[in-house]
Image (cartoon, rainbow, N blue to C red; front, top):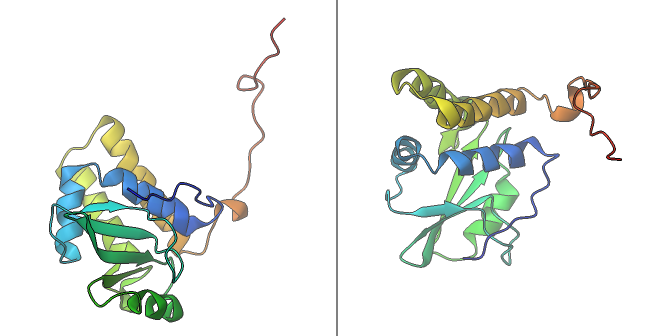
Length: 167
């Protein structure tokens, strides 16, 4: 599988994409995500390598064939990007996930965040599943409200956490 692994993690959108990719290992999230985007539940969703039109955030593959590209934005749609991806092939659906419901994409990060928040409680998630879900919620809250890790205060590393030189 042609996966892209050199994400620029200084961008909130890319951190959100990776956190979603992590939640796609959990059946409750896959089922809802695929239903919300009208994708078959047996697709494999992953960050693809570059294509002629650039690099979509995610690809949905079924039976060894890409059936959709998913573009995620913290704000509104990047229409130019969507047009480029749409010109790749008539057989590949282009899906747009935007920050807010009012931006009109196929799905919004707000909808994802609300579903995940509710699932934490309803499904009684615990351990790693809960932490992964809470992580995505926090990234979406920060990313869709215009706050980035660069705009957050940075605390110095405590003396307890510094690596001590071995003698």
